Length: 192
Image (cartoon, rainbow, N blue to C red):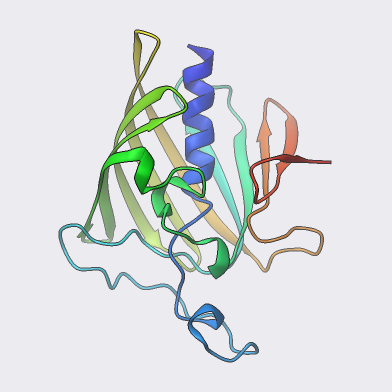
């Protein structure tokens, strides 16, 4: 069960570390212009995932079956907000047979079905809040690997802390679990 819990935790961290680019420098605006606050401009139905304001985001996670105190900080800018939106840079459209987002009052609901590194993950989620300062994510997931199927619930509370600090590049993540913190670069590899 531990690998499935860790897969869920990793998915949660990645879920919040990349979305599609917002209308700022990446879209040809002035380099001195402040990034525009994200909006929920997506149409109903198969909508685009939500966008978050660039900066340092802290995500506190409550993953069923995982130790308490799981959290992550991610440096997000328009360049790292790619097509993987709900799944982060490593979970892309090619990994997922379903990826549907729908706008609802106060946020978005989504359904995804993905096969990632030998694990089949089906997730129904709700994202609520203000994508420029604070939002929450509730996930109900079913994961299957090597003939073992587990279900789990995850709640994520995300808060923008400000600009990314020096020494932390866009795409970098600091993950804390069981009192230990590791830093993972934008390439998905651990950093010293």
